Image 1 (spheres, rainbow, N blue to C red):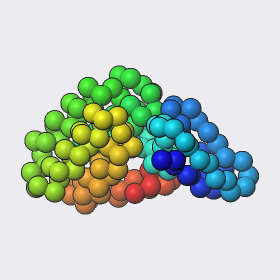
Image 2: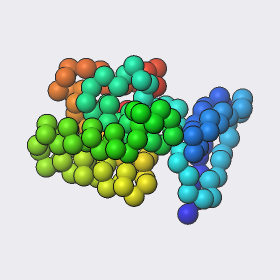
Image 3: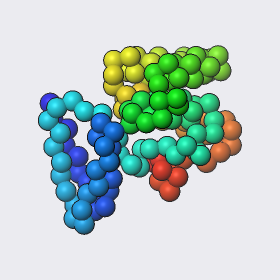
Length: 140
């Protein structure tokens, strides 16, 4: 099954760790094989990885981007996840943690990030913080 991406002018995305920037016109890109893809708007900047869930997201993101292995190894991600399991007790949150772990173990890192985005929203409310925004690098 192909993935079709609609790119805005100048929009950037990462494909298997490579940075791809669209030109000055809207474009459509069809990816026909399995690849690790993340749009720039979904990337969390290092300085924004300031909370437990955001640090787990950052570790998963770095696995996806093949960047900074000391911050983004699968082991680092799983350690962050274990810390979160001691904090999140509601079934709905534990289900998201389980989903994130399962998707990471299956190599579906983007789906791992999607599960963690929901927890970032909840964590932001708990900590009375603004969720990361597009200007901060991550659209939630």
